Length: 398
Image (tube, helix red, strand yellow):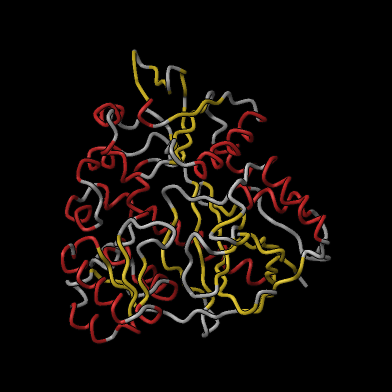
């Protein structure tokens, strides 16, 4: 696995970025004062490409099994930190088993891959994941861009007519994800509209988004936020009547506390447990499975996370923060232990880029359980946040 330069002069690179902004709706090219896209391509050997796909698709199969069990087991739902108001919707099950997920895999010093969390609820990155391969084209010799995220999403939504995009309307970065999905669907003949989930109503058997009838929805609104909606009672009555990419039941897979729940006796087979032990860090509930005293005394060995934090906003790695920050985080954990988990820290291998050594994460998209493309990132520290840099991903076979 290595990185190779795009080989573009500055004017060509600027033109490519303009195309990405205006044709692919990638507006937030800059974050925290720097460009968020590396002018390099991460090249995976064919055997690595096949390995990360196999790991991701196997995790997808295991999570599908777990989701069905947990959804009908209130005791397990309680442990995931999901708002209780959501339970009836989760138990009802989705109208269609639609899935758009992204799994981020980290290379380890032992030569393996670790997956620290799942992006199953509202994963992002479509704009650059599809836009850069289409704009860069065939310029990397034998290395080629693989996967067809656009085609996979269109195929998944093919049974339906009009599709509504529902998103948090106060966030332009969320809107850009909806717009590119709408472009794909409209090109395939699906009428689209967009709005907040607060604008969804069902009347006389028809679901409408801000007055426009829809047969399905693309959801870019976090599942745990739904109880805050003014029309949440309407969503509960709607139940499984509206096919969504992704269904609200995906909230079960999104909870990072699932990493501790799957060790419950009888949930997984011995083979499945061996697989998740190989590719996911040991995880327990902070204050229950791992004592606060142990966390206090061994900060370098632990990572603390909230069940539904996003983009690294509630991830605290003991080895990367000051003793004061670690101590303050433990105070938060003590106040609300049910919402926090403790993960054993694993080794993460950096690799050389033009900016210097960066820690990569290979992001694998799954649509309805199958590989659909890559969205990879790299960061100066082994922690991916909104400041992580996107790096286009290609594959080369001997």
